[in-house]
Image 1 (spheres, rainbow, N blue to C red):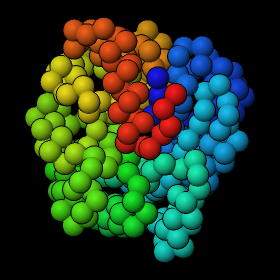
Image 2 (cartoon, one colour; image 1 turned 60 degrees about the vertical axis):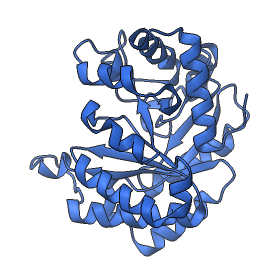
Image 3 (spheres, rainbow, N blue to C red; image 1 turned 90 degrees about the vertical axis):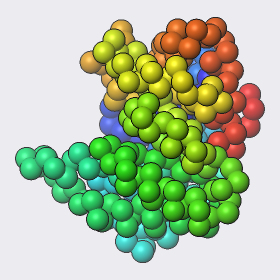
Image 4 (cartoon, rainbow, N blue to C red; image 1 turned 135 degrees about the horizontal axis):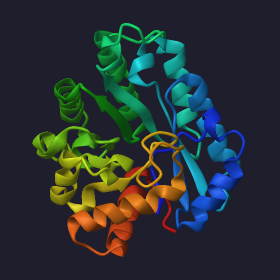
Length: 274
């Protein structure tokens, strides 16, 4: 199994990262991808991937500027991201995208890029992905229409993106209503812990109807912890819980889910088969 999105460079894992990787391997998770969200943690993600390339749960990385930090995307930062993306263990540009939830929160206590700055940063990083011929990891929170519009324009303007599935909508939240539009763009659907929540009816419906060859698994650790561990720190060892719930919703054997989602992640991110 592959955890395609887990923020192992965050402080929540500082004290026991090796144990986290050991538990992942014991649970059958042999690979995890660490996404960048700022320049500093993109550098950290790439460093972890290099350091733990031969770990029992082998690490890869993505690099990018999260939409809430889009105001930090200068020309120099973009150039640095391009350099990081050339490293052997870096497999995509991300986590990039749009987030219209946080700009509306007046008492958040930290600087958040406004939507117009987010849109510009997304377009610039998509262009970087095109130049480097790598896939993208997309964050979309309360910005479905603009996200799909920008991705659609990028796909139209980029022949390589038209030919292949070139990205994933991480922690998919567009519901069944937008699913066909996303699939038409050639994107994968990233499924996380909330699919195990009893009241997540829209996600359950998405899982029932999404083609198996478009699903990948992710924890988004330390966030979005699945049941029965909800409320605690998330980690890659919980990927089997997500796979199990997807199998139940689709009426398939869990082994089928594991086989398909692993192969999908290998194709999307260009990972070696294990």
